[in-house]
Image 1 (tube, rainbow, N blue to C red):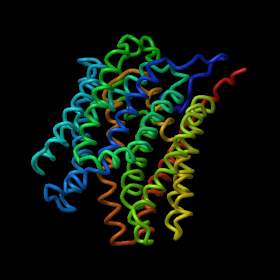
Image 2: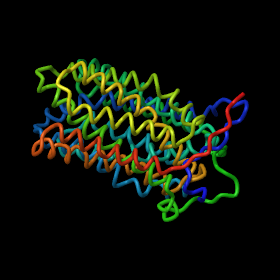
Image 3: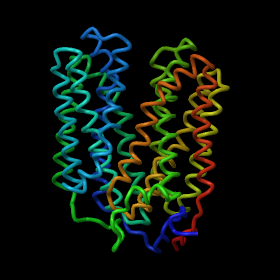
Length: 402
């Protein structure tokens, strides 16, 4: 058995140091990005409708963002290697800021499509570069915690954003887009001023960038990418597209959907940092097995639910599993690439985007032709595959702290 086939985590030191400050900076920057997205996403369909867009055109506008992320992902690794991850990260934030500002002053639906496309490109430049920077900065034994702190910023921003966006929209529909642009400019300034390009504690010495063909033969990399694809499918196909339809079919209004999502997001935010510690202390393999197993059980059980209260409970259970799946796969990727950037990080990001692009369409078709329970079953099945694959990893138990 070679090291490439293991799901091991380097031994934890007896006295574990605090995380590098850049990890917290990346978390704050990510929180600004998600806060801004939360501001504009609830308003975007209403804003597009003012230009005469119907449901199909609005759906295309939303899907275009993910499609542009997916299309631009392969270029992120080479750009980071050529210009440096911090420069690409800042450029992504600035491109998103320009996109949001232009959207606020759009004059037609066609202009909205162009400006949202720019936002999708900027979004993936930021997210891939931010993850690559995180893996380079975080020491090997702290990648789980670092990934959890990073994701916590996104979660908190996502929780607060929608409510604030609704309030700003009362002033004027373009107001959330202007606010998002300002937030992104502030995040870009923070990243440019504080992130240090020479800090590479997570990059193992005497290790070159691992090429993609080598990564595709590494079991850890494949399992992490499989889990990311399943997460994208469930989060954007099932949770975001199907759950609101189910709740509305129970004759609840959209407010009930918001409460369900907010409750589960709060649960995940509370558990994400403890989950990161579990990933570092217990190992990647146990965290992957537990995360995929809990998430699969929760999503599968949604097929049999006919009460709103049980739906909220199961979404919270899924959030608990998802907390582990926010930290463990990224830590696995960091172990595989030895903390160095490259195409491997971009492909890992693409796996989530593929699930986000394909998931809503296929889930909708399954729900129409085979029923809602079968649609939930599709997500559970993908998570079960990831659960089974996680069992094939082997791990070395880390040394416990005294």
